[in-house]
Each structure stands twice: as structure tokens, then as C-alpha cells.
Length: 355
Image (cartoon, rainbow, N blue to C red; front, side, top):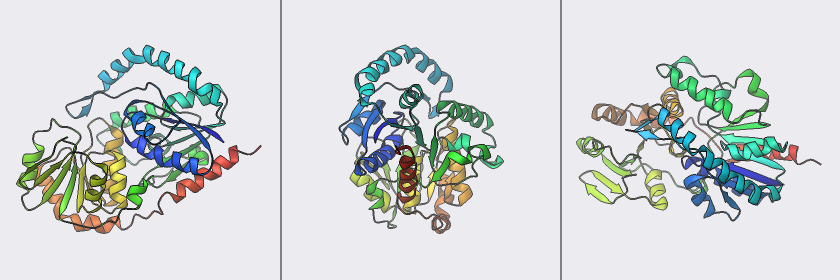
């Protein structure tokens, strides 16, 4: 089957997740043409031959929080150029492929192609959980505006797909009207994580995406009884009990798989990998990103870790004192690699591949 696979370029989690699914499709003799924007294009181009670069929307941040107004304005300003560039990609690289099925990881380009050509379309992402599932008051409390605005956006993003696969470490009830064509599956994990040998060494892994946070290192240094390995600051340096490392995928996986615990934002990819490797998570969501806030709150609800508004000495110290309790709770998470998604996806593909 000829499959057009669209990947949104905002953040790398979509790309690493899609890489796993695309590899599965190719191994099962499907032909796949990938359309992708942003940094994700360069990542997927390194691994696959048939990759088309398109233009996508972006999110603007200010002082560690999502700037909603600026994001809307910037994307409106860029929209005409995006339309022209994507139209060229459409005529040059997509029409001649004549896909029989479309898969979208939160990408509008591939989705709109499917709708324009009456082609079956499958959604595989994590965002649809916000719209298609029920969430109790404790998950939304204090962030109702972010919840409802994000829910409205997600609802409008990819409506009317033939099937929705939602990847998640938590499993809320699917809303009744969506139950027929929605499947929740465990996290999609790359082979490097599935093959990693998990252990508990002395260090805590810290992933920090903001290089402007000048309070991080002083706060961690006050916790002098603990060793921290820090990624995301784009340099190699040692400051007391803090080992700062420039990014290396192999080294990052080794440090993650042997860490006692993980300190990160609310991004799902690292949280998924930490949960699978049974690492307690201290999560600091990016403000105004409801998805990240939701992830942190479900971490707490399941007993897998702690959510906080920022990295502070007292709160992080308390988290580390509770480390064994979180570790024990993580023993309740079970998944057999990516087997469930692959089996369910193959069933849906077979349904659409019938003559």
C-alpha cells in the first residue's frame, strides 16, 4: 500500500515517534512518502530516502512560557508563504505518488490531501487525548482556559479521521461518541530505549531546554549530596556535583537508563522513556502548554513522580526523598514494546487494503 505520512515539525517527539512507525510500515512492504516540516525534516531525512520538506506552523516562547498571542501573529504573517511553498511540494512530490492511505502525526498537510482526494486517513499522535477523552476536574483545575483553548484547537486540527491512535502512559475514558474509532495505546518507544538495560546509579538526569535559566545550576549545587547530569545547556562543563554534557544520543540513553530519577519539562517523549525505564520523574511543564501540565498531573495521579511550577530546592529535595515510593509505583506500568500499536495499526491497514 502507498502511504503518505505527515509529521508536524514543532518539537522532535513527533519525529522520533513517527520514525518507529514508518520503519514498521516499510518492514511490512508498504511504500511510504513522508511530508514533514522544521527540524523534524532533517532528522527523518537522515533515516529515510523518500522525504519531502514542507512549511509548518511554529510556537513562540517567552521566558519559559508559550506566548499564545505572538504565536498566532507570527503564523498569520507566515501563512501566505507557507501556502505557496506547500502547493509547490504538493504538485511536485505528492500528486504523482497517488497515496492509497494517509497517516498524520498532527500534520495538516497530509490530512488535507486525504480530505481533498477522498483518501482514508489515520491519526497517530498524543494530542487527541485532550479532545477525545474525559478528564476529571483535578487535571483541569486552575488551568481551565488553557484546557478549553487547547481542546478547541485539537478538535479543529484533524476532524473526521477514519481512525485515531492515541499514544499515552495514562488511559482516561474515551468519550462515548469517539469510542468506535479511537484506540489508546502505550507509548511508542524507539529501539534504543527498548534495548537499553535499566539500572539505578547515583546520578539524576536533568534535561533543560532553556539556556537562559540562571538559577538551575545554583539550585542543584545546593543539593550537594546528589549528583546531577545535565543535558540541554549545549556545553561540556563540571561544576561541583553538576556534570553538564553537550548532547550525544548514545551517551544520553546510557545516562537515562542508569539514572535514579529524571528532571525534565512536561514533554511526552522523555516522560514516556523514563516511565518505561522505571525512572521517577520531576516534571516542570512549560506554562500555558496544557498538554505538558496534563502530563505532569497524571504523573502525580499515578504516583510516578511530581509536577512543579519551577525547579526549587525544597520541592526537588522532597521529591528525591520520595524516590523509592515513585519507583515502586512505576512497577505498575507494563507494556510489551510497541506490539499493541503495531497489531492494532496492521488491523486497520488491512481493512483499508481490501480490494
